[in-house]
Length: 283
Length: 267
Image (cartoon, rainbow over all chains, first blue to last red; front, side, top):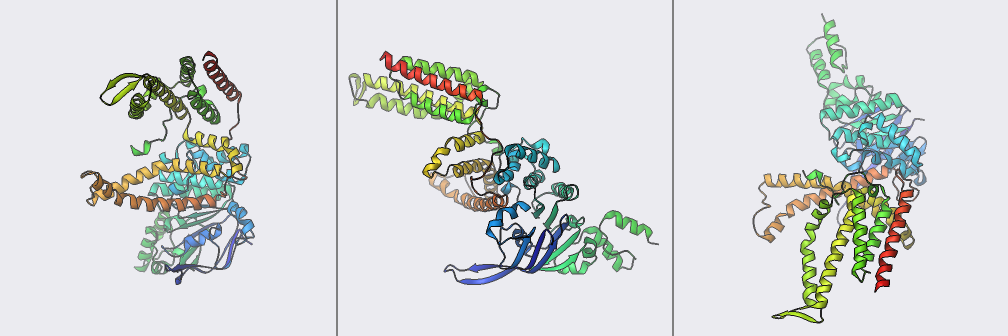
């Protein structure tokens, strides 16, 4: 069994009126089966309201399933007494960098998780050092978080999770509030964790460019998994993605349009270089 | 601009006083303040002034920096002096219309002025030499015995440090909302006091909503990082008494004994 697994997962938001009567039920996650192996880089894609964030919150046991089960490293997330082990195994990074930094100094914030876990002082310092180095923020350890850029703050948040030595990190739209350069720096840090440290990454996003390096991609729509496959497989279905209200990277779109006009190009082109090479080959 | 505002006015430099354990400074300040109200004669005050001067010298904080902090409370000081001067009953010195200045009144006014000035300078040494962070840590650990009486010491300290962390963020946000409202024609500057207070409503409502949203997010992020209150928590920067802290305690004790003792004996 993989590190994260869901079976028939259903989550319903219940809206109530002022008297507490049920007004309506919104099914945010609708029968989702997911199986993530240790060390994989998974991307979950979807437009706003597709249920991807709700799904993410289940992996960290912030939400409990209405129906179905979620296992994290073999532990059922609805078991109350496993709660802290689960949160230690699957760390979570949220969207807004300002609202998840607790410490007033970078190093103190990174130490917050290990402090909560009751790690001895000496080891906390070791963990803080290695985590900050892993995301390339070690030089900033004495800074106040308020003086950092968005991308830097988000890297500090990632280090904060990393210091808890999780097997899996769930990133819930970590780049949504960042500028393009901040986005790049965060994604680079995340890829580094996955490749160098072997941490399982579940990246939730609606930016197509960010999923190119993923091992597997899930596209969500109205709480269901609408598409599943490698980035190349996903991107070769341009029409379907458009129907799901998702933008395709420019290069892929260009290749698709050229194909439609009769130029023989391979399907699912992801990078500029690939397209350039393919075009060079066209006679 | 707004983002550089710090609470308390920490003066960044390196000195013995800066390096002292915050608990020593908290306890010392408290004892010093109490001692000021025990004094009955001027020799005791002299000892207190010498003590204070020594601490100031050791702290490497320029004296004018402390006086700057005094400006804000000059008004308060004046009121205290005036009230004491005119309202203390006793042997009349000068009578002018209905107001009488008494001998006791003059004595009282002078002692009060001296006491308050020394109190404020004394406590400002603490805030000038301790980072807010350090101070909350010190309070958490120093007040731990209160836990026996079900005082949520850790929670209060955590709230204080989170509040400190969010002050600059909320300041920035206020600035942003203000500009947004000004852009839509809101007027924060003209009119009388009531009008201006009412003009603040469109500023405060969005600010509160956003503060609640942030609090919600932060609570979730803290839980996701295994926060579950103070029990079983270790410290990244634990407070451990050093040799200098013990010496400092001794000095404070010595000061107390000498100043209060001298005051009593000579009386």
